[in-house]
Amino acid sequence: MSTVDQFASVFNAASQTAFQHQPPALENALVVTDLEPDAAEKYAGSVRTFFGAVTGKWETVHSGEFATVKELLNLVESRKPGLIVTYRHLHSEAWRWPYSLGEHLDVLIQESTPPVAILPHPDREGVPERVLKNTDSVMVINSHLVGEDALVNHAAVLTAIGGTLHLTHVEDDAVFERYLDVISKIPEIDTDVARETIQEQLLREPSAYIDSCETALREAGVDLRVVKHVTHGHRLEEYRNAIKDHQVDLVVLQGHDEDQLAMNATAYSVAVELRTTPLLIV
Image (cartoon, rainbow, N blue to C red; front, side, top):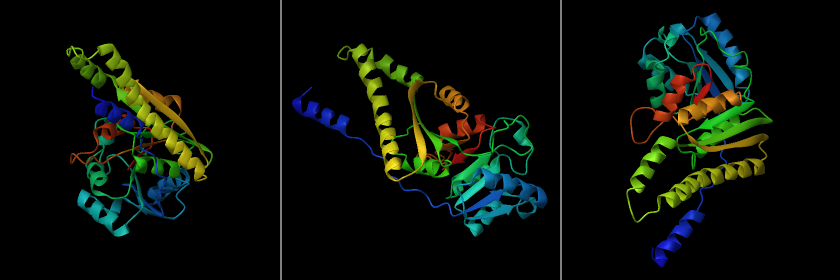
């Protein structure tokens, strides 16, 4: 390696992405249901209790106000909410099967500008008693956490006062091992050194970013505790375990992917799996 390359490597290693605290203004919220008016209002009441951090205007949509995806999109456009709260499989019985979110949500998440909260279906059995009680424990999940300020800002503003904000980053072992297998076939590269140094660098960057999140939130006077989860393993399994172990009340995910029309793959996998855990898709 030339001296110039060595200098560049040292410089790049020292360069870090710092979190910028810019809390979103969630001034009004829209609860979308497929329930009859009285049941819709009762459901909306529990939603308002859960999202206590949203102190602005709340509106509720009942079953008679829309049926098709187009009607739902028009309704959202006319109300212009800062937050949409709903559940999977609107106007459908398919919520009984754990395979999708339903056509209304699939389109709504991609078409709408405001974040979409997906709560357990009101008819679903087996939902833990603590669900929809508060947001004392909020977790951010993304395939790449560094630089995702919007996720952290939304999660922070929705974390209850004095609550815990879990920031996670999981390096996928299967992907890492595939690259290491290729490296092991290149004589000029020491495989053991590559394994150690690459893994260390992959975990160092998100760890430093989370530290910057904690610092910025503390300096802004945000009353919460930041807990760091930086590791490697099977992503979905690690996420499931962390959510269960820390009794997470709300999971915040990145919904949009600039490289594709479909919903972010990590977010969709987690959203389909976690049918009894409230989610926020940003």
